[in-house]
Amino acid sequence: GRPTGWNEDRRSGDLATLKSHFRNTGTLHHLALSGMHVGFILLPLFLILRALNLSPKAQVLVCLPLLGLYLVATGPIPPLVRAVISFALGVIAIGLDRRVRPFNTLCLVAIACLVWDPHQSHSAGFYMTFAALSGLIFIGPILAVGPSTLWLAPWKTLAYGMGAWLAISPVLLWVFGEIFPSAIVVNVLLIIPMTFVMLLGLLLPLVPWLAGSLDALWC
Image 1 (cartoon, rainbow, N blue to C red):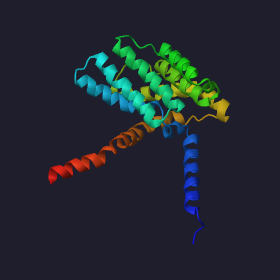
Image 2 (cartoon, rainbow, N blue to C red; image 1 turned 180 degrees about the vertical axis):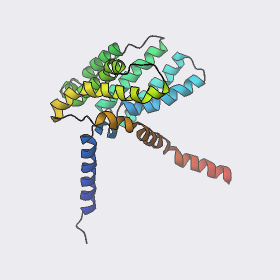
Image 3 (cartoon, rainbow, N blue to C red; image 1 turned 30 degrees about the vertical axis):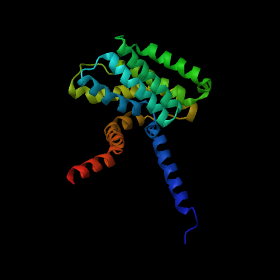
Image 4 (tube, rainbow, N blue to C red; image 1 turned 45 degrees about the vertical axis):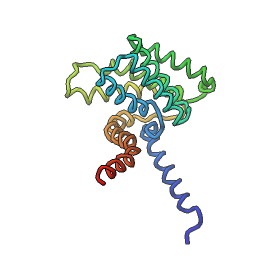
């Protein structure tokens, strides 16, 4: 028979190869819990609360505790802490009827993260997060010039991705000694399949409950 642990070793090797492929295409962040996952939870919730005509303050009272519960459930890993603080500041600004100023928000999040854990100043992920967000906020709009028409939407999406890539490239050179130009196109192409996978992941926990409810109704 096969040696003990052979399957485990093979799976570990496959995962290492898969991770290497993601890294070489500049899409490794899709495998990590990050602000993208928080956004996929918070955005539908906001749409539901607005459809219910809840006041901005009521939306804050619903969203902030849920953000805290999500962080407790997943664990206070640095990328999620940064994401939750960012979204929490945005939610509070909406509740107070204040304009969200991206630069001020980035600075506040950076300060809060460093107060929570000063060691993040030695983390490459810390710099990659804020570099990517800065590229999306400041470089993306410059590149995505033109009228807001449907046929220009793919170019504008690509332009924002290019902005993030340009901002994060110095950090990638510092950390990995190389950059991944393919990430500009690949990340855009991954938007639809990753959206489907993440939505499926959010809905799967409801499947047993739905199946049980339908079974009870049928019987």
